Image (cartoon, rainbow, N blue to C red; front, side):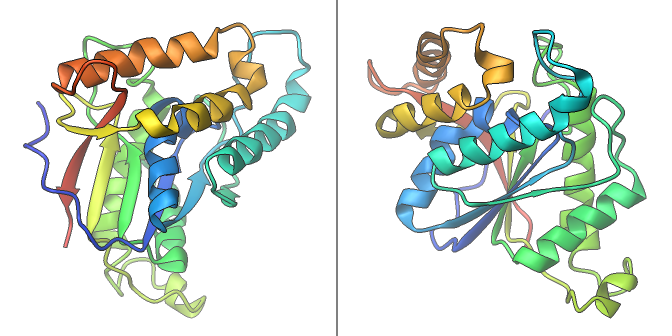
Length: 244
């Protein structure tokens, strides 16, 4: 199973909402692209489902990890020009499912922010990359966010309690998937690579053991080469689908 070919990206997006499972997911996969959106004048916000309490590579006490990773994510977002970062409550790292509760929370975030574009993790597994993109939490958030985009956020009869909270239905026009099989919409992020590196370095609990700059350049060079971009360019790749 794979995605269909990507649709052309909408040219008139004003707001974009990124929904991901863990602090750092958005930065590893999408920070260069988001820096470009911000530069274009698109207002970007993040919704992070967990506080990454199962992450890390050192002896940081587990009880400190959620607060630490929340601070890291806010600093990483600021590095690419994003200043609105919301964390959901009630979801533990490593245990996510595309539950009705998660769908309701994401639908509420969509209605609250009213994005033209939603960016999230792929709900489809990449069998050649079982580690990383195909983490069960990533798949669950991708599925829950897809359901929140359609039908939950736009349907006035889905989660009627949201109407009682003043959250009117909202139609997302476009969804971008990161980390899925055969991504075919490449974004040249060469001009924003320093911002991506800064955003990833902000996640010190996750990246202190990496040579981040080399890691980024190696992977983004491969993406750019696979997309047929000129030598020396750097890219991130997605699947883009219309949802109107």
